[in-house]
Image (cartoon, rainbow, N blue to C red; front, side, top):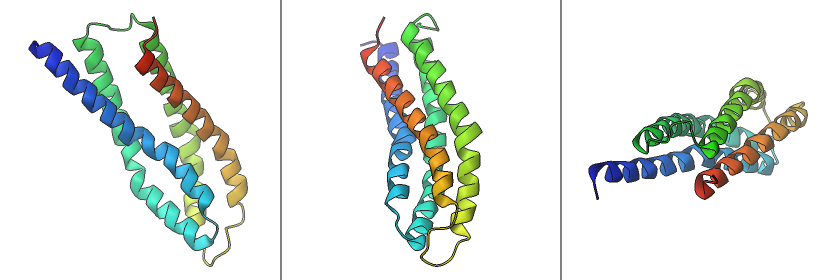
Length: 154
């Protein structure tokens, strides 16, 4: 094995680990929020979310960096359709998250964290109903990207 091949394999491992770190919370957090049935449970879940939310950002940045590095190492560039589609879907995901989910989630977090007692805060369900379809779109696009990365269709 030559050095380029070894470096490529190491970068692939880092890329896969970054995807797990970056994507995992996006799939787990909606399950946690929907399982909270009381105000204190909701505050606990949103407290966890604040701590976990740095992982998708770090993972996403690492994914882009290692993806670009792999394109350079493997001399693929933007000539391969599945890479272009993956990048396009990743950009769409980031626009959805940064432009639509995060601002709504920020307001919702403030609502939840300033609430008291065991009642779910008024307006929580309506706000979550606006976020849920966006999260679902992110999940679908993420799964499509994973399929593209594994299958690598021509």
